[in-house]
Image (cartoon, rainbow, N blue to C red; front, side, top):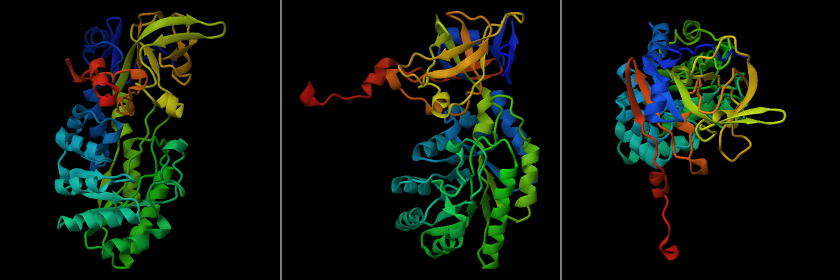
Length: 427
Protein backbone atom coordinates (compact mmCIF):
# COMPACT_ATOMS: atom_id res chain seq x y z
CA UNK A 1 0.00 0.00 0.00
CA UNK A 2 1.47 3.38 -0.96
CA UNK A 3 2.89 5.83 1.54
CA UNK A 4 0.28 8.54 2.08
CA UNK A 5 2.97 11.23 1.95
CA UNK A 6 3.87 10.52 -1.67
CA UNK A 7 2.99 13.00 -4.40
CA UNK A 8 0.33 12.15 -6.93
CA UNK A 9 1.12 12.08 -10.63
CA UNK A 10 0.37 15.48 -12.18
CA UNK A 11 0.09 17.10 -8.77
CA UNK A 12 2.96 18.53 -6.72
CA UNK A 13 3.80 19.54 -3.18
CA UNK A 14 5.09 23.03 -2.47
CA UNK A 15 4.66 25.67 0.22
CA UNK A 16 3.60 22.93 2.58
CA UNK A 17 0.68 21.42 0.65
CA UNK A 18 -0.60 19.94 -2.60
CA UNK A 19 -1.06 21.96 -5.77
CA UNK A 20 -2.89 21.16 -9.02
CA UNK A 21 -0.53 22.56 -11.63
CA UNK A 22 -0.01 26.16 -10.40
CA UNK A 23 -3.16 26.39 -8.29
CA UNK A 24 -3.21 25.49 -4.61
CA UNK A 25 -5.74 22.89 -3.50
CA UNK A 26 -6.05 24.89 -0.28
CA UNK A 27 -7.08 27.91 -2.35
CA UNK A 28 -9.64 25.86 -4.26
CA UNK A 29 -11.13 24.56 -1.01
CA UNK A 30 -11.37 28.12 0.33
CA UNK A 31 -12.97 29.56 -2.82
CA UNK A 32 -15.15 26.68 -4.00
CA UNK A 33 -15.69 24.66 -0.83
CA UNK A 34 -15.62 20.92 -0.39
CA UNK A 35 -16.27 18.32 -1.60
CA UNK A 36 -15.10 19.37 -5.08
CA UNK A 37 -13.66 17.58 -8.10
CA UNK A 38 -10.46 19.12 -9.47
CA UNK A 39 -9.00 18.25 -12.89
CA UNK A 40 -5.57 19.13 -14.32
CA UNK A 41 -5.81 20.11 -17.99
CA UNK A 42 -2.13 19.42 -18.64
CA UNK A 43 -2.73 15.81 -17.66
CA UNK A 44 -5.58 15.48 -20.15
CA UNK A 45 -3.36 16.78 -22.94
CA UNK A 46 -0.39 14.67 -21.91
CA UNK A 47 -2.39 11.45 -21.92
CA UNK A 48 -4.04 12.14 -25.27
CA UNK A 49 -0.86 13.26 -27.00
CA UNK A 50 1.10 10.28 -25.67
CA UNK A 51 -1.44 7.83 -27.08
CA UNK A 52 -1.69 9.73 -30.37
CA UNK A 53 2.08 9.65 -30.75
CA UNK A 54 2.17 5.90 -30.11
CA UNK A 55 -0.45 5.37 -32.84
CA UNK A 56 1.39 7.60 -35.30
CA UNK A 57 1.49 6.05 -38.76
CA UNK A 58 -1.69 4.07 -38.25
CA UNK A 59 -4.95 5.31 -39.84
CA UNK A 60 -6.44 5.68 -36.38
CA UNK A 61 -8.96 8.14 -34.91
CA UNK A 62 -9.01 8.49 -31.13
CA UNK A 63 -12.63 8.83 -29.99
CA UNK A 64 -12.77 9.81 -26.31
CA UNK A 65 -15.27 7.66 -24.38
CA UNK A 66 -17.47 10.42 -22.98
CA UNK A 67 -19.00 8.22 -20.27
CA UNK A 68 -15.72 8.38 -18.31
CA UNK A 69 -16.10 12.11 -17.67
CA UNK A 70 -18.74 14.03 -19.60
CA UNK A 71 -18.04 17.60 -18.43
CA UNK A 72 -18.17 19.91 -21.45
CA UNK A 73 -14.85 21.55 -20.54
CA UNK A 74 -13.09 18.18 -20.36
CA UNK A 75 -14.51 17.16 -23.73
CA UNK A 76 -13.50 20.55 -25.17
CA UNK A 77 -9.86 19.94 -24.18
CA UNK A 78 -9.89 16.78 -26.27
CA UNK A 79 -11.83 18.40 -29.11
CA UNK A 80 -9.13 21.06 -29.44
CA UNK A 81 -6.56 18.26 -29.75
CA UNK A 82 -8.47 16.72 -32.66
CA UNK A 83 -10.25 13.92 -30.81
CA UNK A 84 -13.51 12.30 -31.76
CA UNK A 85 -16.04 10.95 -29.26
CA UNK A 86 -17.55 7.61 -28.32
CA UNK A 87 -21.07 8.20 -26.94
CA UNK A 88 -23.73 5.88 -25.55
CA UNK A 89 -26.78 8.14 -25.26
CA UNK A 90 -28.41 11.16 -26.88
CA UNK A 91 -27.29 13.21 -23.89
CA UNK A 92 -23.65 12.28 -24.48
CA UNK A 93 -24.08 12.95 -28.20
CA UNK A 94 -25.37 16.43 -27.48
CA UNK A 95 -22.54 17.03 -25.02
CA UNK A 96 -19.94 16.00 -27.60
CA UNK A 97 -21.43 18.28 -30.23
CA UNK A 98 -21.74 21.18 -27.78
CA UNK A 99 -18.09 20.77 -26.79
CA UNK A 100 -16.97 21.03 -30.41
CA UNK A 101 -16.48 17.40 -31.50
CA UNK A 102 -17.22 17.18 -35.25
CA UNK A 103 -20.16 14.82 -35.92
CA UNK A 104 -18.10 12.90 -38.48
CA UNK A 105 -15.82 11.88 -35.58
CA UNK A 106 -18.59 10.60 -33.31
CA UNK A 107 -19.34 6.91 -32.77
CA UNK A 108 -22.65 5.96 -31.11
CA UNK A 109 -22.29 2.73 -29.09
CA UNK A 110 -24.52 1.04 -26.52
CA UNK A 111 -26.96 -1.87 -26.46
CA UNK A 112 -30.23 0.03 -26.11
CA UNK A 113 -30.43 2.94 -28.53
CA UNK A 114 -33.99 4.25 -28.87
CA UNK A 115 -35.51 5.30 -32.18
CA UNK A 116 -35.49 8.93 -31.04
CA UNK A 117 -31.78 8.69 -30.25
CA UNK A 118 -31.13 7.05 -33.61
CA UNK A 119 -32.97 9.82 -35.44
CA UNK A 120 -31.06 12.53 -33.60
CA UNK A 121 -27.71 10.92 -34.39
CA UNK A 122 -28.65 10.39 -38.05
CA UNK A 123 -29.67 14.02 -38.37
CA UNK A 124 -26.36 15.08 -36.85
CA UNK A 125 -24.42 13.06 -39.43
CA UNK A 126 -22.27 10.93 -37.11
CA UNK A 127 -19.45 8.65 -38.25
CA UNK A 128 -21.10 5.36 -37.32
CA UNK A 129 -23.41 3.38 -35.09
CA UNK A 130 -21.90 0.37 -33.32
CA UNK A 131 -24.78 -2.10 -33.57
CA UNK A 132 -25.08 -4.78 -30.89
CA UNK A 133 -28.08 -6.86 -31.97
CA UNK A 134 -30.17 -7.78 -34.98
CA UNK A 135 -33.31 -6.01 -33.66
CA UNK A 136 -31.26 -2.82 -33.30
CA UNK A 137 -30.07 -3.24 -36.88
CA UNK A 138 -33.68 -3.47 -38.08
CA UNK A 139 -34.68 -0.40 -36.05
CA UNK A 140 -31.78 1.58 -37.50
CA UNK A 141 -32.81 0.66 -41.02
CA UNK A 142 -36.44 1.65 -40.40
CA UNK A 143 -35.54 5.05 -38.92
CA UNK A 144 -32.92 5.80 -41.57
CA UNK A 145 -35.26 4.80 -44.40
CA UNK A 146 -37.99 7.06 -43.00
CA UNK A 147 -35.49 9.94 -43.18
CA UNK A 148 -34.31 8.95 -46.69
CA UNK A 149 -30.88 8.16 -45.24
CA UNK A 150 -28.63 5.16 -44.78
CA UNK A 151 -27.17 4.60 -41.33
CA UNK A 152 -23.40 3.95 -41.27
CA UNK A 153 -22.97 0.78 -39.23
CA UNK A 154 -20.22 -1.27 -37.64
CA UNK A 155 -21.38 -4.53 -36.09
CA UNK A 156 -20.05 -4.99 -32.57
CA UNK A 157 -18.78 -8.54 -32.34
CA UNK A 158 -18.31 -10.36 -29.05
CA UNK A 159 -15.05 -12.31 -29.54
CA UNK A 160 -15.48 -14.45 -26.37
CA UNK A 161 -12.21 -13.18 -24.89
CA UNK A 162 -11.90 -12.70 -21.13
CA UNK A 163 -10.18 -9.38 -20.46
CA UNK A 164 -9.02 -10.63 -17.07
CA UNK A 165 -10.39 -7.55 -15.31
CA UNK A 166 -13.19 -7.05 -12.75
CA UNK A 167 -16.18 -9.15 -13.78
CA UNK A 168 -18.49 -6.11 -13.62
CA UNK A 169 -16.49 -4.28 -16.30
CA UNK A 170 -15.73 -7.21 -18.62
CA UNK A 171 -17.74 -7.01 -21.84
CA UNK A 172 -16.26 -9.42 -24.38
CA UNK A 173 -17.09 -12.85 -22.96
CA UNK A 174 -19.76 -15.20 -24.23
CA UNK A 175 -22.79 -14.51 -22.07
CA UNK A 176 -22.04 -10.79 -21.57
CA UNK A 177 -24.89 -8.53 -22.70
CA UNK A 178 -22.72 -6.70 -25.22
CA UNK A 179 -22.22 -7.42 -28.88
CA UNK A 180 -23.10 -10.17 -31.34
CA UNK A 181 -21.56 -13.60 -30.80
CA UNK A 182 -18.70 -14.05 -33.24
CA UNK A 183 -20.27 -17.30 -34.48
CA UNK A 184 -23.31 -15.28 -35.63
CA UNK A 185 -21.28 -12.54 -37.32
CA UNK A 186 -21.63 -13.69 -40.94
CA UNK A 187 -25.41 -14.08 -40.82
CA UNK A 188 -25.89 -10.67 -39.18
CA UNK A 189 -23.53 -9.01 -41.67
CA UNK A 190 -25.58 -10.50 -44.51
CA UNK A 191 -28.74 -9.15 -42.88
CA UNK A 192 -27.14 -5.69 -42.66
CA UNK A 193 -26.21 -5.81 -46.34
CA UNK A 194 -29.82 -6.65 -47.26
CA UNK A 195 -31.48 -3.86 -45.29
CA UNK A 196 -32.28 -0.69 -47.29
CA UNK A 197 -31.43 1.82 -44.56
CA UNK A 198 -28.01 0.40 -43.66
CA UNK A 199 -24.56 1.23 -44.96
CA UNK A 200 -22.32 -1.53 -43.65
CA UNK A 201 -18.91 -0.04 -42.80
CA UNK A 202 -17.11 -2.61 -40.71
CA UNK A 203 -16.66 -4.41 -37.42
CA UNK A 204 -16.37 -3.18 -33.83
CA UNK A 205 -15.40 -4.82 -30.56
CA UNK A 206 -14.71 -3.83 -26.97
CA UNK A 207 -13.69 -6.45 -24.43
CA UNK A 208 -13.74 -4.50 -21.18
CA UNK A 209 -12.26 -1.79 -19.04
CA UNK A 210 -9.18 -1.34 -16.85
CA UNK A 211 -7.04 -3.84 -18.77
CA UNK A 212 -3.53 -4.07 -17.36
CA UNK A 213 -2.27 -6.79 -19.72
CA UNK A 214 -1.98 -6.75 -23.50
CA UNK A 215 -2.60 -10.44 -24.20
CA UNK A 216 -6.42 -10.11 -24.14
CA UNK A 217 -6.09 -7.39 -26.81
CA UNK A 218 -3.83 -9.59 -28.89
CA UNK A 219 -6.31 -12.47 -28.68
CA UNK A 220 -9.34 -10.31 -29.46
CA UNK A 221 -7.73 -8.39 -32.33
CA UNK A 222 -6.40 -11.64 -33.82
CA UNK A 223 -9.94 -13.04 -33.87
CA UNK A 224 -11.11 -9.76 -35.39
CA UNK A 225 -8.49 -9.99 -38.16
CA UNK A 226 -9.49 -13.59 -38.89
CA UNK A 227 -13.12 -12.50 -39.20
CA UNK A 228 -12.18 -9.71 -41.61
CA UNK A 229 -10.37 -12.23 -43.84
CA UNK A 230 -13.38 -14.57 -43.83
CA UNK A 231 -15.79 -11.77 -44.73
CA UNK A 232 -13.56 -10.46 -47.51
CA UNK A 233 -13.23 -13.93 -48.98
CA UNK A 234 -17.01 -13.83 -49.33
CA UNK A 235 -16.80 -10.52 -51.18
CA UNK A 236 -17.85 -8.33 -48.23
CA UNK A 237 -16.01 -5.01 -47.98
CA UNK A 238 -14.67 -3.97 -44.58
CA UNK A 239 -13.62 -0.31 -44.45
CA UNK A 240 -13.38 0.39 -40.74
CA UNK A 241 -12.46 -1.44 -37.53
CA UNK A 242 -13.45 -0.09 -34.13
CA UNK A 243 -11.05 -1.56 -31.57
CA UNK A 244 -12.76 -0.22 -28.46
CA UNK A 245 -10.93 1.11 -25.42
CA UNK A 246 -10.19 -0.24 -21.98
CA UNK A 247 -6.53 0.63 -21.39
CA UNK A 248 -5.90 0.50 -17.66
CA UNK A 249 -4.47 3.01 -15.21
CA UNK A 250 -2.47 2.60 -12.00
CA UNK A 251 -4.91 3.01 -9.12
CA UNK A 252 -2.53 1.23 -6.78
CA UNK A 253 0.89 0.10 -7.96
CA UNK A 254 -0.09 -1.85 -11.06
CA UNK A 255 2.54 -2.39 -13.73
CA UNK A 256 0.99 -1.17 -16.96
CA UNK A 257 1.90 -1.67 -20.59
CA UNK A 258 2.90 1.49 -22.42
CA UNK A 259 0.85 3.09 -25.21
CA UNK A 260 3.71 2.10 -27.54
CA UNK A 261 3.32 -1.55 -26.55
CA UNK A 262 -0.43 -1.34 -27.16
CA UNK A 263 0.09 0.31 -30.55
CA UNK A 264 2.47 -2.49 -31.50
CA UNK A 265 -0.27 -5.04 -30.80
CA UNK A 266 -2.58 -3.04 -33.08
CA UNK A 267 0.04 -2.94 -35.84
CA UNK A 268 0.80 -6.64 -35.62
CA UNK A 269 -2.81 -7.85 -35.61
CA UNK A 270 -4.98 -5.48 -37.66
CA UNK A 271 -2.56 -2.84 -38.92
CA UNK A 272 -2.04 -4.55 -42.26
CA UNK A 273 -5.72 -4.97 -43.18
CA UNK A 274 -6.04 -1.62 -44.92
CA UNK A 275 -8.88 -0.47 -42.66
CA UNK A 276 -9.43 2.84 -40.94
CA UNK A 277 -9.19 2.30 -37.19
CA UNK A 278 -11.10 3.76 -34.25
CA UNK A 279 -9.71 3.67 -30.70
CA UNK A 280 -12.01 4.58 -27.78
CA UNK A 281 -10.06 5.35 -24.58
CA UNK A 282 -11.92 6.86 -21.64
CA UNK A 283 -10.55 6.10 -18.18
CA UNK A 284 -7.00 6.07 -19.58
CA UNK A 285 -7.26 9.72 -20.61
CA UNK A 286 -8.90 11.19 -17.52
CA UNK A 287 -8.54 9.05 -14.38
CA UNK A 288 -5.20 10.24 -13.04
CA UNK A 289 -5.88 13.89 -13.91
CA UNK A 290 -8.55 14.32 -11.22
CA UNK A 291 -8.93 14.38 -7.46
CA UNK A 292 -11.94 14.62 -5.19
CA UNK A 293 -11.06 17.30 -2.65
CA UNK A 294 -12.70 16.74 0.72
CA UNK A 295 -12.53 17.98 4.31
CA UNK A 296 -12.62 15.91 7.49
CA UNK A 297 -15.76 16.64 9.53
CA UNK A 298 -14.99 14.46 12.56
CA UNK A 299 -12.38 12.02 13.79
CA UNK A 300 -14.14 9.15 15.54
CA UNK A 301 -12.26 6.86 17.90
CA UNK A 302 -13.84 3.40 18.15
CA UNK A 303 -12.75 0.59 20.40
CA UNK A 304 -11.11 -1.29 17.54
CA UNK A 305 -10.98 1.16 14.61
CA UNK A 306 -10.45 4.84 13.91
CA UNK A 307 -12.68 6.71 11.47
CA UNK A 308 -12.14 9.88 9.47
CA UNK A 309 -15.65 11.08 8.61
CA UNK A 310 -15.32 13.35 5.57
CA UNK A 311 -17.76 15.54 3.67
CA UNK A 312 -17.43 13.48 0.45
CA UNK A 313 -19.55 10.35 0.24
CA UNK A 314 -20.56 7.38 -1.87
CA UNK A 315 -23.01 9.55 -3.79
CA UNK A 316 -20.08 11.74 -4.91
CA UNK A 317 -17.69 8.85 -5.71
CA UNK A 318 -19.53 5.55 -6.22
CA UNK A 319 -16.67 3.31 -7.32
CA UNK A 320 -15.56 2.08 -3.87
CA UNK A 321 -19.13 1.13 -2.92
CA UNK A 322 -20.08 -0.17 -6.37
CA UNK A 323 -16.97 -2.16 -7.27
CA UNK A 324 -14.95 -2.27 -4.06
CA UNK A 325 -12.58 -0.02 -6.00
CA UNK A 326 -9.39 1.39 -4.54
CA UNK A 327 -8.44 5.08 -4.67
CA UNK A 328 -5.28 6.53 -3.12
CA UNK A 329 -5.87 9.17 -0.44
CA UNK A 330 -3.48 12.02 0.32
CA UNK A 331 -3.41 14.65 3.08
CA UNK A 332 -3.37 18.03 1.34
CA UNK A 333 -1.12 19.55 4.00
CA UNK A 334 2.35 18.02 3.91
CA UNK A 335 2.64 15.43 6.69
CA UNK A 336 5.72 15.16 8.85
CA UNK A 337 7.82 12.50 7.09
CA UNK A 338 8.71 11.07 10.50
CA UNK A 339 5.10 10.89 11.69
CA UNK A 340 3.74 7.41 12.38
CA UNK A 341 1.40 5.88 9.80
CA UNK A 342 -1.71 4.12 11.09
CA UNK A 343 -4.78 2.55 9.46
CA UNK A 344 -7.91 4.71 9.35
CA UNK A 345 -11.34 4.05 7.85
CA UNK A 346 -12.13 7.00 5.58
CA UNK A 347 -15.92 7.18 5.42
CA UNK A 348 -18.63 9.54 4.24
CA UNK A 349 -21.76 10.90 5.95
CA UNK A 350 -24.32 8.99 3.85
CA UNK A 351 -26.60 6.75 5.90
CA UNK A 352 -25.33 3.46 4.44
CA UNK A 353 -22.81 0.96 5.75
CA UNK A 354 -21.26 0.84 2.27
CA UNK A 355 -20.36 4.55 2.40
CA UNK A 356 -16.67 3.77 2.84
CA UNK A 357 -14.15 5.54 0.62
CA UNK A 358 -11.36 3.33 1.93
CA UNK A 359 -11.11 0.88 4.82
CA UNK A 360 -7.96 0.78 6.98
CA UNK A 361 -6.08 3.23 4.78
CA UNK A 362 -2.56 4.04 6.07
CA UNK A 363 -2.42 7.73 6.95
CA UNK A 364 -0.28 10.03 9.08
CA UNK A 365 -1.90 11.87 12.01
CA UNK A 366 -4.93 13.82 10.75
CA UNK A 367 -7.64 15.78 12.50
CA UNK A 368 -11.02 17.40 11.94
CA UNK A 369 -10.80 20.28 9.48
CA UNK A 370 -7.90 18.80 7.50
CA UNK A 371 -8.21 18.47 3.73
CA UNK A 372 -7.83 15.12 1.96
CA UNK A 373 -7.40 14.55 -1.79
CA UNK A 374 -8.85 11.29 -3.13
CA UNK A 375 -6.74 10.47 -6.15
CA UNK A 376 -7.42 8.87 -9.54
CA UNK A 377 -10.90 10.40 -9.47
CA UNK A 378 -11.05 11.93 -12.94
CA UNK A 379 -12.88 8.92 -14.42
CA UNK A 380 -16.25 7.58 -13.28
CA UNK A 381 -16.39 10.06 -10.41
CA UNK A 382 -18.57 13.12 -10.95
CA UNK A 383 -20.20 11.50 -13.96
CA UNK A 384 -21.65 8.70 -11.77
CA UNK A 385 -22.63 10.93 -8.85
CA UNK A 386 -26.16 11.03 -7.49
CA UNK A 387 -28.20 13.13 -5.08
CA UNK A 388 -28.82 10.27 -2.64
CA UNK A 389 -29.70 11.49 0.87
CA UNK A 390 -30.71 14.75 -0.88
CA UNK A 391 -27.07 15.72 -1.17
CA UNK A 392 -26.59 18.21 -4.04
CA UNK A 393 -24.18 17.41 -6.86
CA UNK A 394 -20.72 18.75 -6.07
CA UNK A 395 -18.82 21.23 -8.24
CA UNK A 396 -16.06 20.49 -10.74
CA UNK A 397 -13.01 22.70 -11.25
CA UNK A 398 -10.56 22.74 -14.16
CA UNK A 399 -7.02 23.97 -13.60
CA UNK A 400 -4.78 24.94 -16.51
CA UNK A 401 -1.42 26.27 -15.40
CA UNK A 402 -2.20 29.17 -13.06
CA UNK A 403 -5.77 29.45 -14.36
CA UNK A 404 -8.74 27.98 -12.50
CA UNK A 405 -12.39 27.82 -13.49
CA UNK A 406 -15.50 26.26 -12.01
CA UNK A 407 -16.76 24.07 -14.85
CA UNK A 408 -19.83 22.87 -12.97
CA UNK A 409 -21.14 24.92 -10.03
CA UNK A 410 -22.27 23.37 -6.79
CA UNK A 411 -25.95 22.49 -7.07
CA UNK A 412 -27.99 24.65 -4.66
CA UNK A 413 -30.40 22.77 -2.43
CA UNK A 414 -33.18 25.01 -3.78
CA UNK A 415 -32.44 23.77 -7.31
CA UNK A 416 -32.51 20.16 -6.11
CA UNK A 417 -35.89 20.65 -4.42
CA UNK A 418 -37.24 22.48 -7.47
CA UNK A 419 -36.87 19.31 -9.54
CA UNK A 420 -39.81 17.80 -7.63
CA UNK A 421 -43.46 18.74 -8.11
CA UNK A 422 -46.27 18.23 -5.61
CA UNK A 423 -49.54 17.28 -7.35
CA UNK A 424 -52.42 19.74 -7.04
CA UNK A 425 -54.54 17.36 -4.96
CA UNK A 426 -51.89 17.41 -2.21
CA UNK A 427 -51.72 21.20 -2.08
